Length: 120
Image (cartoon, rainbow, N blue to C red; front, side, top):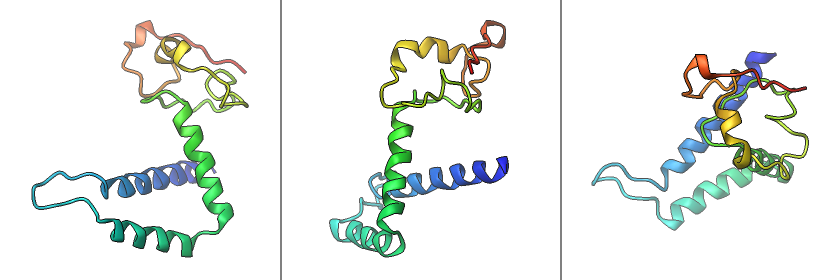
């Protein structure tokens, strides 16, 4: 089951990257999508997804926006890293603690300076 959850997150992340690519240009030949092209994408998503599916996606993206950038903590039962009321949690205040947590897989803090901040 753990792998399936990882696959869902990975696929969702790539979908966000693909959607983001319509707004970004890397080469001189490539231009941003026109409004008509964007609307074609929106109409396709609208035809494939129910209103509930769109709402669920919005909820996931809101959760993503609340956690600090460049953090990957797999201890989802930890109340510090994944609080029940994520909208009221103040992560910027405790950013240093997140960076020094041994469960933060993306932290660039040296291993000898990391601590076990895992809290149930």
